[in-house]
Image (tube, rainbow, N blue to C red):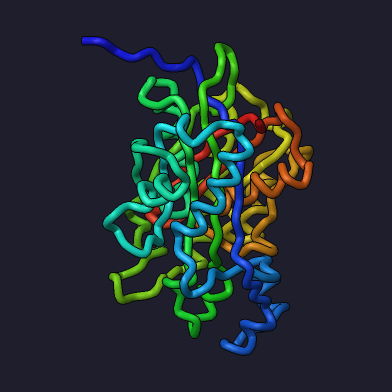
Length: 320
């Protein structure tokens, strides 16, 4: 039996991002539920968030972000042979979002699938893309995190409507040379015993979250995962240029950053103006940080995604 040769490693070639035009401030939400700008900022750190238009779909946002990543990579659409869309909020389960996105981008007949690991989705998808490149199953992979959480939010529930938002981020993954640590080993896991802490009961229900339980879990269980991802990549926390956690809650982000022990690393805080965009939050933050010139090519960044399931995943990447 013949086995295809893969690559010694995989790396990210480019990022892309998309945010909807509609900005919703804390004051706007104060007109809907019993809350205030001070109350929201003190608990989750959010000042504003973006919401998709009623007719704007997860696929629309994924296409916008992925198109930018593809253009930035310099690759023609024909060079992409696998498309992975991380999402937990597709409009439909059949057909999958990835195949629709690929066709709209002019990518002919790639492998295409959706992946649902909730807010850890992008890190899961990035690991799958890296493994596919290293195994020889694909040469160039388009990885997208896209969410329209606004369609699953009860806008009379202040525990969720102040947090969740919409958007998309994308990355193009390709082969790396020998000794090139473009995407480090993933450290991942789950705890189904906490599945009832963030969930949607059925297709006619809204998202429900036990915020205090999630906060306690995230601030106590995740820093060893982050440390192990550095260890597996052979990178000391002091070598990191950036720490890009899932943008769940500013207090969680700050607690994780303190425990990481990497004071020199720039910490992504997109949560302040983007809200919690689930699987889109990490690639969205990365694209914005690189776009603003905050990170340079060759910099090392630690990513960690976590959320419903509960699922979590972390890896160290090299900025393209």
